[in-house]
Length: 405
Ligand code: ADP
Image 1: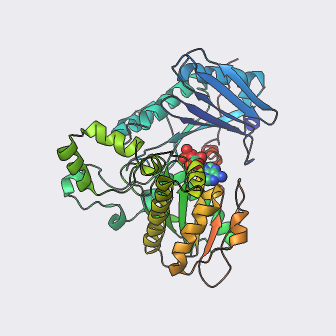
Image 2 (image 1 turned 135 degrees about the vertical axis):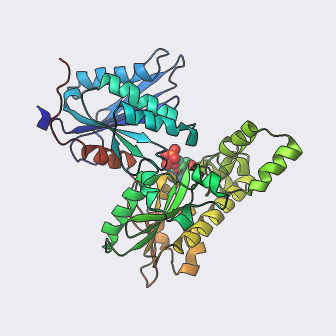
């Protein structure tokens, strides 16, 4: 029976939602995927998508436990439950403790939970997802895949904040996030461009609601834009990215904002939303900017300026820049953001191929730069879920206990 259990269930658990994907063997597209949303509220529901379409199941106010139990029942009905050989969990923060994907037991889960002080918005929900999943799928390995792991190779000069040692020793440093995506996209780029796995330099721009850019030298992350938390760096949907820390003292003293006010201001009211006064959604802003909306124009301008500035800066951590890679919802689907950013990167010798760029969206992968002596620009569709499934699959070896009858 064990050798037939080749499916991997991937779970990404947030505070009020839970996303899942089920991968069969090594196939890159999910056999079944979906999400449970509004968990704990009266309209909580589970949405399942497969090749046949979409099924919506009301959870009647149920929380994470109800959602996972219902998902298990659906998997059972579809004769898929017994095929699961491992569960991969996305965990946002692994701190300095978790350098790689890790098979969890209760002790290790407690250690992950203890890192919640570094990611109070994410880790508690991630851990809750693992606990519930272990209850309902206790007979298979549960593997934690951390957003931070790919960045544990960042050298001290790039991960240290210039603050006194006592605080640095207490773990206040750059960790970086989106690591699963950056690692996956970097490996894909090396293959696509036929680069030497031991001798290449890439800057990956993962641009979604959350955005970060990473310098990858010979397969390893050597610098990244996000920091202790996912707030630092690029302009994001509702997050400010970089801001002078002195501005926070100013806002506190002058406007009386509390720590919680500042947290909410910079995480939820800033970024594209704050700049435009209109929306956090890049599509909405592109349309509004085309119609002359000043706030939307400003938001696009600042986003592109910051991104180009970061890509240029990150390139200095490499020995040679072979390519800039765009991924994530915006990176994969917005020819405009790419074209404007690549135009700013002319200084690095990158030239946009207008026609190729305009045709690159909707999950397509390929070059968007003119082939010349300079670095390439390309688009690669990220597949974080599949990358998590792959990590989890590595822990499937050995004998596995049988599911309860
Ligand atoms: P998340 O970080 O939540 O996973 P995504 O990677 O799905 O986010 O990215 C969401 C962003 O992608 C939104 O700002 C959305 O407007 C943008 N996006 C999606 N499609 C397009 C498009 N065709 N043109 C421009 N932006 C797009």
